[in-house]
Length: 378
Image (cartoon, rainbow, N blue to C red; front, side, top):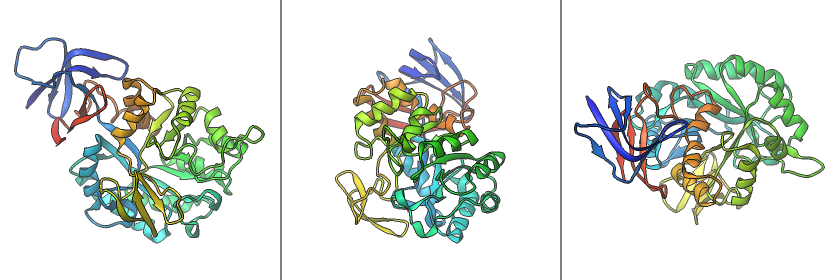
C-alpha cells in the first residue's frame, strides 16, 4: 500500500527538504518529491525526522532488561514510542553471570517479536567495571574481563550483542577489546578510575565509545586528564545524558564544542521508572527514589535516568548547543553510527525502513511511525 506524507521540512542525512513529500510503500521509503498530485497526509508546519535511536536504555514503563521477565521487552518496545524512539539497544546492568545469562538469552528469543520500537541488539553495561566509580552498579559482581564469558553470552543471545562497556584499568583489557571486535561487538569505556593514558590505550586497542560522559568516571584535571580528558582528546564517540541533572549544560557544550556534533550522541540511560511518574522504584538490587526529575539511590547518587530521549533533543537545542537538525542527528544517525547500525536506522533515505517521527520546531513530539505505520500519537 502506497502512503504519501507532506511536511514543511524533511530531515535527510545531509539535507533538509522544504515543503516536500515522502513516499512509503511496503514499509520502505521509496521517494522524496517536491510535487505530488494524489492523496497524501499533510503534517502542515510540522517536521518529518528520523525515528530516534537509543543505544543505552535499561528499562521503561516499569520493565527492566536485566530482570529477564518474559514479555517485558515488548513493554519497553511499545512504551519507547512515546519518546520518539524507533530503534534501541536494550541494556543490561552489572549482575551475576547467571542473571546476565538469562537476560541475554531472553532478549535473543524475544527481540524479533517486539511490537513497537525495533530492537537492534544488546548493550551490556558491565560487569567489567571498577568500584571507585560504580554508580548504581553492584561491585560484588565486578571482575576483570573474560573473553570466554563474552563468547558464552554472545552464543546465548543468538549473536546479537552489539556493545559492551568495560573499565580500561582492568587486567586483560586490550586482548578483550580485540576479541570483542572479532565477534562484531563494539567496546565502550565507563565506570572507571582509569588515567587518561589507560583510557587512550584502550581506544588505541579498538574501544570507540565513552558512555555517559562525565558520569561514573575519573574527571578532568590539568595534571592528570583522566577518563574525561581522554574522551575529549580522542576521536571516540561520547554519550551524553542531557536531562539537566547528570551533566550541566555548559559541560555538555564543552563536549560538543571539543568533539563536534558528529561524535557526541544522546542517550537516556533510562531505567524502569521512566514513564511512571514519581515514587519508589528499584534498579537491579537497589531501591530508587524518583522525585524532581531524577532517579536516585537512597545514598543520593543518581541511578540512571528517567529521561525521554525526545526531551534530550529538546534540551540540547534549548541550551544552544546545537540547532534543531544537529540535535536530531545526535539522537539518530550518530548513535546508529557508533555501533555500526548506520545502514539500518537513524537516517531517512530511499530504500530505508519508514521509521520516522513528526515534531515541531520546538521539538514537541506528535507522532511516531514504524515501517510507515503510525504507532503513537500524542
